[in-house]
Length: 285
Image (tube, rainbow, N blue to C red; front, side):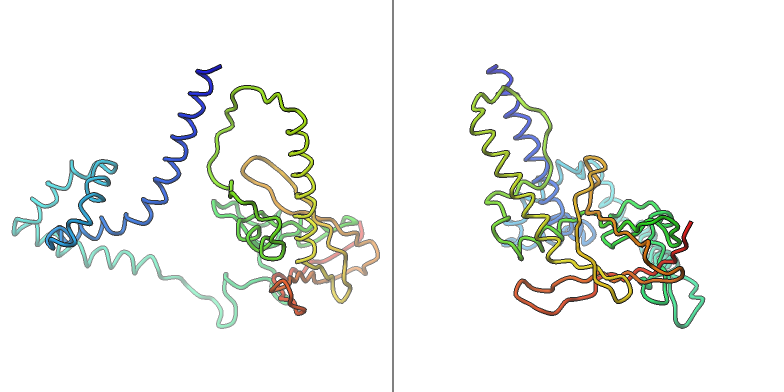
């Protein structure tokens, strides 16, 4: 039992350090890269070097740059090396500029246009959007052409949504933010059943308040008719989940319709901001 607890503590410490490493890495990588391409400019000033050297040695060890840095400096010390470098810089710039070009077919429409009354962007339709490593934070429906008696509206979860919910309901914001990297490993058994039960009940009530706040913030309209926002959490797997609701559309006439989703801008504001417009065609099966 003691060994399990010790092992859990070690795993937790390692995970915490791992997470903090990436945070620090993002902040100081640019600094070390600047020092490398300027041939150690930050180390030449004595007062800057005193501050910079601890980070320099730390990142040299993590990135193994101490293995290749002497080769780069030695290469640049020679006249031939400097000439090659001078030729490579414009070549890299040329490549970067070249891949930035694209052909625009219209003066009025681009691939970046959001969906609205006259535009149907594929990112708003689940059967058409392309799989991407980036989370789609726009609302989607199942298809551009719907023959079923309902429309499914879905929004992938994103941390910005949760931050917005905290602004509207500050009681939901925990004292300790547990978002981030975690381990599923558990050691031991919690014998305090009553305390655990109370914690679960409290969290369940907070979840309900969380969803209620989301449904208060966002509103749905099809054409000119408002519909009650009844989103729930749809959990697909550990990494992907979101907000989902279904609306019956049997009463709609066949043809084109427009879903408009709006949200309150601030907690005490009356006006709403339109965040998504999705056109679709409904034909009875």
